[in-house]
Length: 285
Image (cartoon, rainbow, N blue to C red; front, side, top):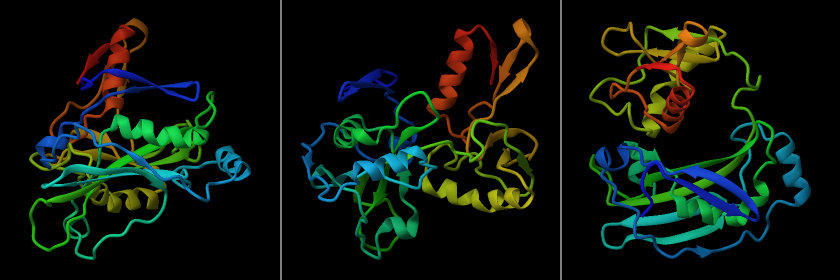
């Protein structure tokens, strides 16, 4: 049992990767998924046709974002009878779902917290996909859970599948680390109090796409979301957290929207607030 907030160092072929253990509040509260402990034993099926060293080097030289994936992925099943079972590292590839799988009809899908053992298992076989340090490139790990039970009817599913995929990634924006232009959305809201705005679910992404398209039409990179009730208080941005710096030098203070129940908490937000506090800046939420 690893406590929330702990730092775990994963040794991968002599390279140490530091990770923080974070358990988002939505896992148990909104969806009611069971604990992932104790873990089942993993089996490993290696990809018979992995990318060649030359192809891998070509991808890592210009990975973009979300365009390429490593040779393997992790899959773990859950049902009420067996709990978590059938844990395996397997070749990356398409998955098969029944046409009536609940995820396809009722959007029971959410990215999961970094399930530490599955991370270890995947990196152990795909360590060569980790980009060299010193630049903006990284290996983006994407864990998620989908409801795989077949059948129609609005209710929590009785069968789920956890998957972990990895993608070598460069800068999220093609311009790199440079200022982005933003569109203040008055017409649409991302989430409302009492909803699932504080959960990292697939449905929340889908709800943001019309406003993001509107922002693009106006020549902007991102959307700034306002509160759902009065449409006057800033909450967050489409692809990142939003912080304001007021004042200068010793008088500078860092201000960010408070957690209202309609925006994601997230480790990025938590880390920036902690780092700012450690550096002596005044913080306001």
